[in-house]
Length: 122
Image (cartoon, rainbow, N blue to C red; front, side, top):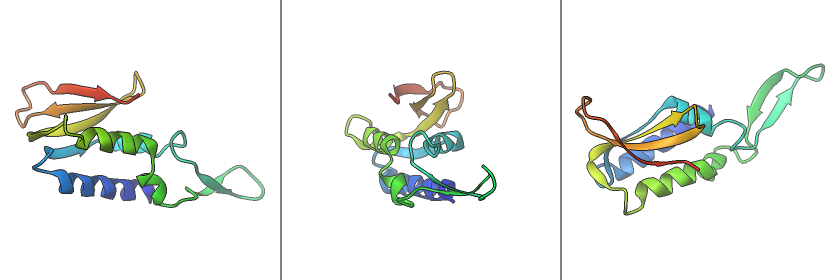
């Protein structure tokens, strides 16, 4: 499914840049779900002839739609540009439901210390 594919893409991004840009990349499941909603990716729905029930949903470009996804491109470019390097910190991306935005923070292993917000999605 697309969720698993997106998680795999993020894991590859994490592994490739780990130690250079961050200690670890944490992107919540809620962020991935928000990336996969119909607002960001075009989907074709296969429905029953006799109703509106969606039987199967897929993007016309398949998994390529995930790499070309505008919000994923925004996240990737922000994460790996030269101004956002903290190889000893955890890069955390969460979803702010109130503002409907993705929030990027630098966090330490010490959970008693607050994370430092770096940017939000547009």
